[in-house]
Image 1 (tube, rainbow, N blue to C red):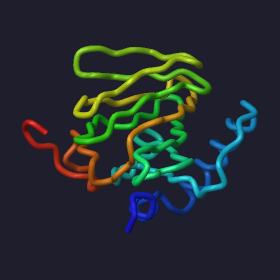
Image 2: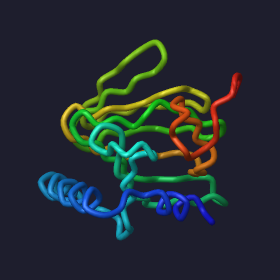
Image 3: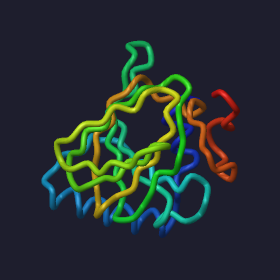
Image 4: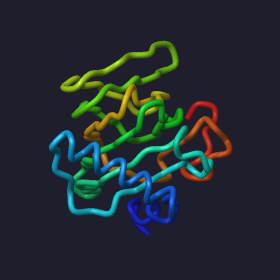
Length: 164
């Protein structure tokens, strides 16, 4: 099972998903942004509180053999992608629309459209929408098991260990 299939397997379903996607598509249309022809991942990280902790991902490419990944990440106003880090993945965030607050262990930064932020492998981070926000993530390949979430209640990825 590849990383996208693993993501789809834990995606939010039902009415929560339908409402989230309707709102997401409305924002994207308002911004005039084209999306790739893929099924979006609507994620609540297994916590059951999508409005507070979650995001929507649209994968553009995850070319493991070629060494790159590109995807859109979308968060609603006040919605957070929870604190995590990656053992192997390095990410660069480009804010396409809206504003985003990125929290690192010792600093919080707010990004506006057109701004760029690199997240190095091993660096703990989370991000929250300041209003609805769409960012483009450019990274090394996405591997679900490379995610290590600080919250032990999150049932995906791997457990964070000391020194990881």
